[in-house]
Image (cartoon, rainbow, N blue to C red; front, side, top):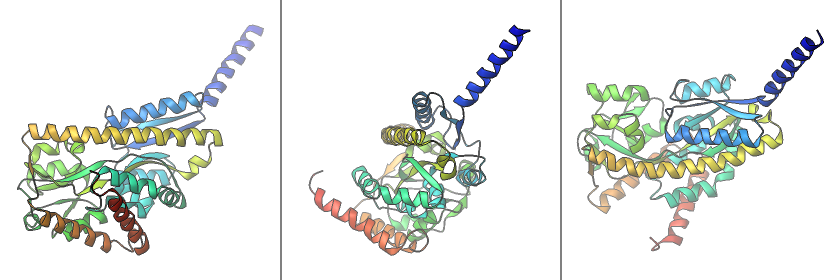
Length: 337
């Protein structure tokens, strides 16, 4: 009898220890498929925080869009069904509108400029998330976004004949294409491949890596060799769940988040470059914009689109400060490339 009591007591101790070691599980969702670099780095992040916390902190990962698109995941986070997510700029703008400036068209010329703005405005972006009930764990940039079509697009006039997809509800994409002279066709991401197959649309936009993963490259012939934008992405967490963590676990989560998401961003940049080579081998033709004058026309359209979004995502002062910071940075770095 005594042995039985001891055995039961030991079992209860083990169960209690297990519960104690898993007291802070963060339910995380992402559109990225399992086995992708995105989820692989996230699992490295998970392993690191589990090790540092002695197993007290970790993610439960729902990959491949099983929890839905950005809007579905955000709704579930607001309901407390999920705690964290890897979101595109589209989703991020729903919880911290001013960060959509990062996705605006023809804002950046290179990754140095991208990194400059993220660094200079880091505190302001972080505050925007916290003020709206979320904590930024780390930026996870999607990368340069290109226009993919079935007819070659070089000039603004060429855009007029494109039946361009737009992520349904994305006001930045809508403003962008209207500035380019297009009335886009709103669809969910999961409908794009089928719509390219049926001819409902004959143009889309995404990063080269995403084009391969989503198989969109199999239904287009051309890619305009001028990036439309640098698409943002980030891992965020509800502030409610974050505030439940002891301060030492918060520090572990934030420090590792910045480390691993920066690693992911750099890997994504490399993989996007490699994806362009793969697309070319598969038959996609890169179409160059033939003159600086035409590039300037695209840049002017981008500036027009950014201006139309004042009052929707950000105020005029914020837009002015972003553009001024870039102008100063370009001036300091002129002739160094």
